[in-house]
Length: 204
Image (cartoon, rainbow, N blue to C red; front, side):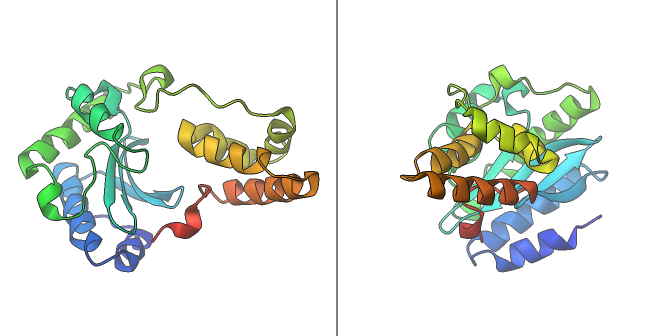
C-alpha cells in the first residue's frame, strides 16, 4: 500500500468521529485499486489512478465528504449527483458523520471499480455534466489579469469547481473599498498559487 504521509497527517488532525470514516474508505480504495496513488490537492486527500484523479475525501467540523471525480459518468450517476446537490459542502455520498452513514462496502467497491474503469478508458469528465451545474461565475477582467500573471494560481482556479471559484470571486468583488479589493485579490492569488480553496483555514 503506497501511502502519502500528508494524508496520514490529515487524518490524524481530523475530528475523532471522522478518523474511522476516512481510514475505512482509504483502505477500501487501496484494496480495490492497488495501483492507486495518493496525493493532496486543494488541501484535501485525493486518490489518483492512471495519471488522473479518481476520488477524494474531506473532513469538516461536523461531517465528512467523499467525492468521485467522474461521478456524472458513473453507472449510478443520478443517485450520486442527487446526494451531492443536498449541500455544496457535502460529497457524492451525502453527509457522513459515522461509519453507519456509508453505503455497504460492496456498494463502495462497485463505485470505486466504476471510477477505475472510466480512468482505464481514458474518459475525461465533461464540464457540462459535472455535479456542479450552476451557471459559471463571471470573472472580472482585473481578476483574470491577476491570474494570468501567476501560472500556478491560474491552473488552480481553472481546476476549481464553480462553487470554489465563486467563493474567491465574490470575496474580492464584494470588498467595500478599492484598497480592500486589491488586498484581497493579492491574497487570493497567493493562496491559489499554493493550491488552497478560499476557506482553507477552516479545514481540519
